[in-house]
Structures are given as structure tokens and as C-alpha cells.
Length: 169
Ligand SMILES: [Fe+2]
Image 1 (cartoon, rainbow, N blue to C red):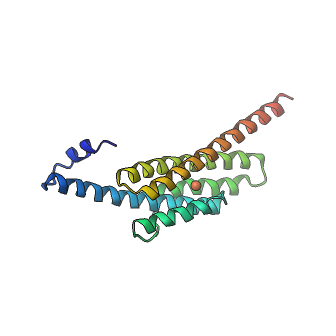
Image 2 (image 1 turned 90 degrees about the vertical axis):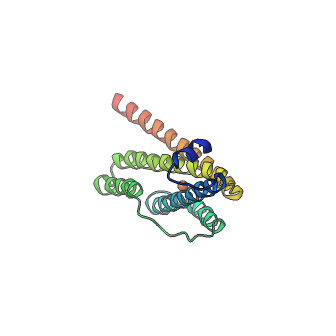
Image 3 (image 1 turned 120 degrees about the vertical axis):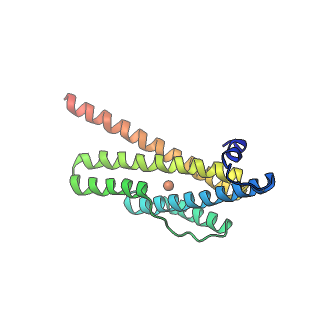
């Protein structure tokens, strides 16, 4: 994020440079809050759909809402709904088939990468907004998500290897 560039783009605002900073940081705070709501929805949805271990991340997100004195309400997110619909479709179409595991793994990877993108952005926003507590929590969560993403990649590699071995026999 380049603060100088961001101030330049807001040509319709006529306040002093300090006012512009405040205006710009309050808009960033709104976006920070919106992204927090989006990722909270993704975490809640993925608890139901695939992951159980995201409970801790939901608790951390709730703390971040407390830090900015906002309620952790939900917003509608087409992206999250699409990702979760994919999980449901795979379960309905391929239940008890080997394809179900591969499909769920790929859907889980997409959710993980969506979360990684959001947590990375939120961490940068928290840094700019000088929300130190949130910044640290977001960095921890980002690292957890990356580790989970790597585990899912490892599982995919194993599944592909096993599939190749079965097809060669
Ligand atoms: Fe998560």
C-alpha cells in the first residue's frame, strides 16, 4: 500500500492534508471492517463445511471486532457462498466415491487461498491503521492458514501419486 498514491486519487476531497489523512484512514477502517465481516463469514461457513479447527480463528476475529468497537455481524458474500456451494455439490454428487475426497480437497484448497488473500490484506490494513493487536493476530492466523494450505497441497500430491500408481497396475 502506498499512502501517497491513495491520497492523490481522492481528488474530490477538499480538506487539509491532515483531514485527508483522517478521511483516508476512516475509509480504510471501513474497508478493514468489511473484510473482517467477509472473512468471519468464510470461517463460519468453512467450520460447517469442512474444517473444525477454524473455531480459534473465529474467536480471534471476534476479538478484532472488539478492538475496533464494532459488532461481528455478517455481510452477504457471493465469493464465500460460491465456495461453500462447491463443497455441497461435491458431497451430493459424489458421496462415498473416491472422487468426493479429491473434490473436497480441491474445494478446501480454494477456501484456504481465499482466506490467505483476505488475511494478508487485513494484516496490511491493520499495519497502516496502527491496530497492533489485530496486526499480530492476523499475522498468526495468516501463518496458520499457509500451513493448512501446504498440508492440503501435500494431500493432493499424495492422492495424485496413489491414483497414478493404481492406474499403472
Ligand atoms: Fe481459516
